[in-house]
Length: 339
Image (cartoon, rainbow, N blue to C red):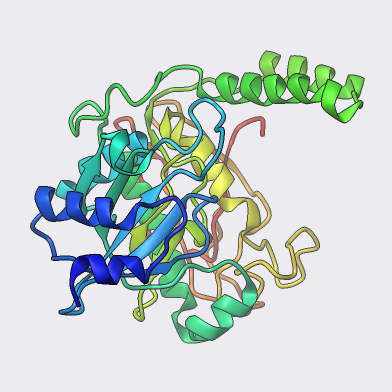
């Protein structure tokens, strides 16, 4: 089958298959067209396809959705910049293969990255199907250690100093949320004075930011791939990433981690709502590092009720987040002060 004959029989939303394959053939040496195209679900509506050549070698192509987009939404250049910067550091991201800035190829920016083995976890059914109970502790350690490794990378050193503003991350998020609220008032024909009060209160009481790192913005189990060994094989979906407060990233990440077996605030279908994961305890003490990070960290030395393996949350050293297994402590919780 020739490339033209193959392309005539295929369709992929948002892609001129012939033109994209010709661009890949001319600009990369990773694999050779023609490819089979398989739609991958998820990815915040970005049009994402798995490509496979005749030898079985696979990659992924990704572009924004069709239609008019909000400013800065579905930023392919941002995603590409991040995986291209992280990959040489040994951080688990897909291999960067090629980025196309020529809109004439298929009407939008797109990039090609290596295919990473593993599965994301959206629900408790995903966890039950993919992660044996005996390996869920391993998954938890790998998940939080990967976040700590990301925060420990200096954006100035790895070429990401222009990714965004470093200062006032929490303030920027509050203001962005408030702009979204205000812009929706007329359309929804609804306003609530409490929203304006919340904005004022949060801006007046936001925690001090001590350092800046790359923050993912949506680091959770559905945006990681986990291999058969239950360790993170790749971190995905970087479109919300910027520079900011690593503690905010950490606090967001822990939002759906259970505090106990009967945690009433845990969504019943959450991927962590199954046995085998370590818990967050009640907050026992407030700890600050020598650098003055406002970290709330709960630590106990044993768990006589569950016997579950421990995690340990350290402080923060020399401006980088370090969350590690370090001692036999039962569980952990860390959050930005005031959230």
